[in-house]
Amino acid sequence: MKKRILLSLAFVFLLNNVVMAHAEESPSLSNMKSDTNKVAVTEATKEKSILNSDLLNQNTTMVPNASEKEEGIISQARLDSSATKASMTSKVKLTGMTWQKITSTGSEVNFGVAHQSKSDLVFNWMYYDLTNKTWMTINPSISSNWITFKAPHSGQYLIHVIATNAEGQSDTYTIGWKVADDTLNLKGMTWQNVTKDCSKASIGVAYTSNNQVTFTWQYYDIIKKEWHPIAKDITSNWINFSVPHSGQYLIYVSARTANGIEKTYSIGWQVANETINLKGMTWQIVPNDLTDSNFGISSETNTSVTYNWQYYDISKKEWHTITDQTPSNWTTFSAPHVGQYLIRVEAKTPNGLTKDYVIGWNEKSRHKVTTDGTILSNESQNMTKLIAHRGNSSIAPENTTAAFTLAKGAYGVETDILLTKDHHWIISHDSTVDRMSNGSGRVSDLTLAQIKSLKIKNGVNIQNYPGLTIATLEEYLGIMNQIGARPVIEIKEGPERITPNDIANLLHALNTYNLTSQALIISFYLDDLKLVYQQNQTLEMSLLYAGNFTQIQFNALIKEMPNTGLDINDAFMSPEVSNLLHENGRKVGIWTTPLNSVNRYLDFGIDYFTTNQLK
Image (cartoon, rainbow, N blue to C red; front, side, top):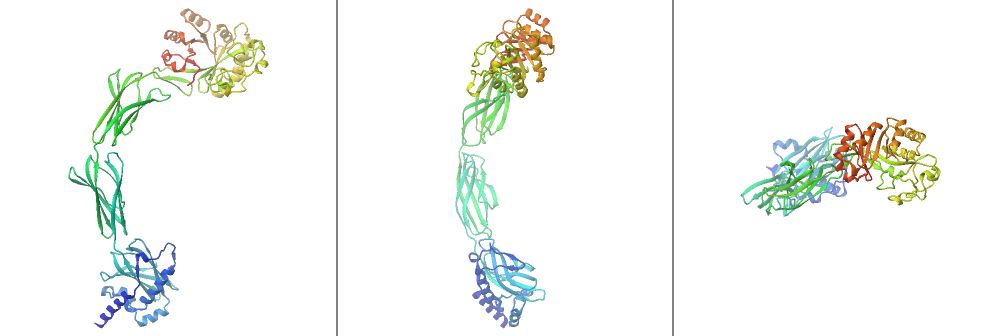
């Protein structure tokens, strides 16, 4: 009985003298380092450690009584006067305790004890719950001088540690610890609409708390009188939600702390009736494509919308789907053929409200030029080849090195050749140099040296190409090799001036640049082509013609020139002429036709299409 009274008095003394550590008073450990069972002690914790050491470690009756079951665990904490004396001479010395909060309330915290010892220590950690008057072990017999303490509830505790060395020498240290009560306050809700009708939104609740909080969200459908869960026991105070229909709702959140404190908050929510209005359709023909056009519908709506696109083929009286259930208000229509269509779009809201819009569409002839100079059409399967007339003469002076270089991408590049006074082939369409250069006179009256001394002064965008001169045949052929184009050479010189040696020089130049097998020789003079044929029977040639081409004329061509086709002015081209040439194994071309008119001739099956515009 006397012993029990003494312990009770000691416990009262402990409560009156222990320095209680409050969460808000604990020192920061952000700069603290612990290694080899050492603790770095700040000035603040050192003061507390000294005070705790004086009050706790030197008063044997300060540790609360334990049950018989716990007697063995904490018996080392009971110090009598002899133990106190032994502690003074012991090789183990606990000099203070420090901590680092994990939660702001102090319900979870790391504790460390500073010590002095010449050998390894074993630490036994425990806490005393002053509310429930019970001792509980934290970590028994560990080598670390640090532990993590998790309090079961708010209130006051004693944190107690016993350190023992291998010789059985020990020391103890105890501090008081207070875990604050949870606080929680919900201050209001905010939101951000995802859809204009408010059927989808992100909602958040503002709150303050000194502990971890989980949130459970629900909504109440006022029309159907039903509760529906949104999210349960989540740590985020924001949720994304969507409701099934227009009408009024309650948005409800329950917030709960780790220790069970709960608060709720709710707001009213209204989802507007869906609206949609289709205002008109626009389109864009896809550049350099034979079939594709992009269509878009302009719309006003307060909700999300999906679109169903269709086309009606008027010639076949058939509906076809373009795209189905797409969120995009744009689609790509690939017309299967030239002709008339209806383009229809139906817009649909999540709750089934629909509107539609229809326009007529006339798919016209289209063409495109491939990288190898082939002209493709949406009306013909023919593989017509593009020939650049006098180079790319729509953007640079005709028949110049600039125009030839800029014709890259064409299948072939057409040019004109004439003989100088000293019988060199040069590039010129006109028989004189007057129109294109700063000189005058006939080409046939000027030597090569005289002609090369002249400067090009006229032509498209001449200001962008200073210093151009009249080109030679060799300069032209060199550029054809550079750009990978087929040379198409018109002999402008009449047969009265051309000698077999002149033709030999032309063929020699082609051979020098390895272009003999690729060259196409054309002329209005059939006799010029005969001269070429006499020296090379494999070269492809074409007779230039501007007039009605008859069967009689064709028979003569076949008889005299077995490898020669026809290059006719587009005004005199017809399916009959094309068929006549093709049935007899001859190529046929037209000149000089705008590129945007090519489709009317492609069905004729023409092989070559000579134009000034490459795009």
